[in-house]
Length: 200
Image 1 (tube, rainbow, N blue to C red):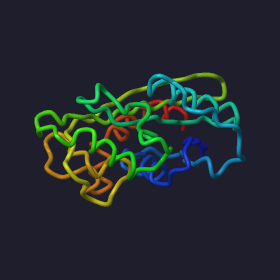
Image 2: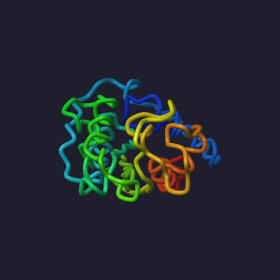
Image 3: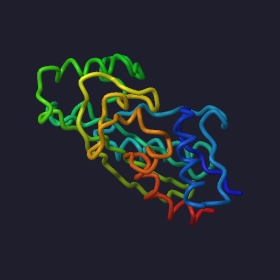
Image 4: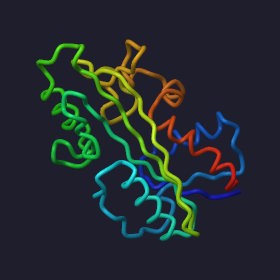
């Protein structure tokens, strides 16, 4: 059994990758999170792009633990805000990880816009780094529009206001299996599957 570190403390992200591996019949891999390994200094996310941040997180984790490591950086790109919050998505309101404050601020910034100008996309870069220094980075996007108020309790972050193209429900109203198939992170993690299979 090959242990692969997913460089996160978010249990929902761990569950997501485990579900994807199971759905795709990838065996021989044990996914663990940062809570399962000794603490190590984690570099702050200072990259200008999702790719830079994902690569740095995966590289740091692989070097610190000696395990192959997967990391992602993802966020919301709002057309009317010129692609912001982007890499600042988790701290858009000024406090890192305050989902409600971040979401409320985005809604306030586009409150007067008509539906046809509320376009947005979730973007995810996922990186795989090995202790030997090999690195792979993939990127996926999930286009949609922003609802006028939050709906749904599944997911996290901006999920309650993101309505994917072709749907009338928000990302937070999709069940987890549906979301795995459609989402930016689900798409990106699937792009890494050939490399994860090789490690297994």
